[in-house]
Amino acid sequence: METRPAIRRSTTAGNFVSALRAPQSPGSSASFVPRGRRAPPLGSLREPIHPRGRPLCGRPSTAAVEISGSSASCLLAAAALLVLLGAGCGDDGDGGEDGAGAEGGGGPQPGPPDPLPFAPAESRDDGALRLTSSAGTASNQNPCFAPDGSFLVFTRFESGYNAGPAHIWRLDLDGSEPVQLTAGDYDDVNVPFGCFSAQSGRVVFASDREEANDFWTVSPEPDAPDLQRLTDHGELPVWIEPVFSPDAARVAFEQNIDEAEGELDQRASVWIVDLATGQAERLTNPDDTLDDRLPSWSPDGATILFQHRVPPSELWEVFLVPAVGGAAENLSAKADKSSGSDTDLSWSPDGRWVASSADPDGIVHPNIFLLPLAGGQLVRVTASSEHEDGAPCVSPNGLWVAFESHRTADEESASDIWIARVPEAARP
Image (cartoon, rainbow, N blue to C red; front, side, top):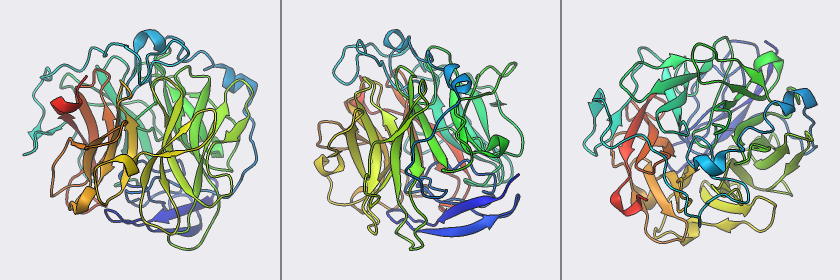
């Protein structure tokens, strides 16, 4: 595999540190660090990446990039039925002009039921239930509910937390063992929200396959995964964190802006690529002074959610921006808390809440919280003083949150997929 640059981030709860690494040969160690979330699709990532802050890698570029028409056309209709199927982590919402969205009346999805139809292997004092368990260094991360809520897909990093190679796996919520969907010496990485097309059922992920850094899709059917390349822009600039728009005509993603050498000087921006034209346009950070990551569409398709930092500050906040562009709004500033970062963001299916891995007011480890879109009091979902919880995804019926949790107090330790009930105050 071709060598390429990579970025390393080292963080603790409420702290973000990043440093550039020189280009690495295949199998050598290099990584960047988000907060409690996925790694970039770089085959050279063979070392743990920390949470907090979102993935970042690659060289600066602000130029629009093109996608081959043949590659793009395969998913132009990818979510036309979202209006009928509703919103959730799997499909990013109702979508289109007729979508229910944050203010609509679309009904919840049917699954998973409460209680679950099987007995999970372990439970915590806060009621969270463990869904996966892997031997050795394998780390299970980034759970994403299917549109009907009957199963999850997730990324398994084979060599430790955010340490590739990485592959996409499927976990049916019936007590069965997970099944591998992608394979090879690659980094295939999905995100917890917006990874499913409700019409085609395919899963979008970032990958370094074919010596590039592009977006691919895979069928979640284990007998016929059928990988397809979605974009074809090449190796640089590096694209990561792909999420479908509700109508699947566009993909929002994160792009690295520069190679700042200072630990807190890394920057990134949110972009949108039109799958029909292949044109990519920047949505945030026009002057390259900010750090914007992990975009996702609201259930009605009108708003993009992302996490935002002003270098060299270590504070991450929740920001919202119209999908057509415009002024961004700071949602964290409307929440009832005095301190702490909000990262690993995703929507609730009704658009009323933002799920976050947060450490408000000095809690020991980041846990899962729900921030009301209207502002006000946070709703706490998990309460672990021993483990960091991240990458939350609210189920399509709004009753559960799937998330990743580190196996020890060490934020570099491998993680597993867990699930917790949404408190009554935030249920549909």
